[in-house]
Image (cartoon, rainbow, N blue to C red; front, top):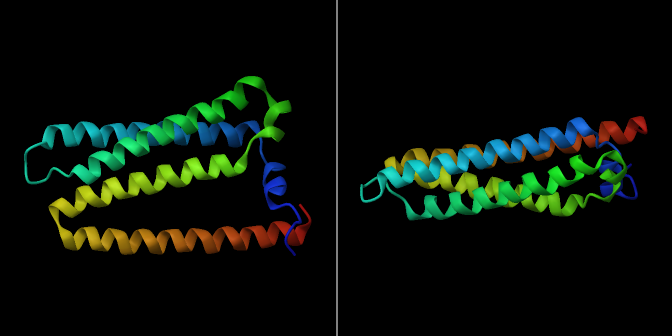
Length: 147
């Protein structure tokens, strides 16, 4: 049985530790995106350079920095404001960030080996599908226990 308000149910599980983890992941991933931009600046003009990777890294960097600031505002003001977090905005920021970063990495790998790029896409899609199925299984367990 699914809760009548899945977003509210998810928000009920938020804690300071969860938000700190989300903030730290956003900042770490922004750093990874910046690293790709620096790498690409070194490769500019060579056969390994990819404009797609550059632009995807820029989108990823901006999305993750926004995500960091979005979550950080809630941490600064304390637990009494956690109930006001917009989980759809947080999920959208994460989705944009992850997809942009994945695109940047695939485009960089693709420049070195098309076969490796294809393998990365296939494995990435398989990983995403596995995560979706696993998350749904955990949600069913949570709903079954009445948590």
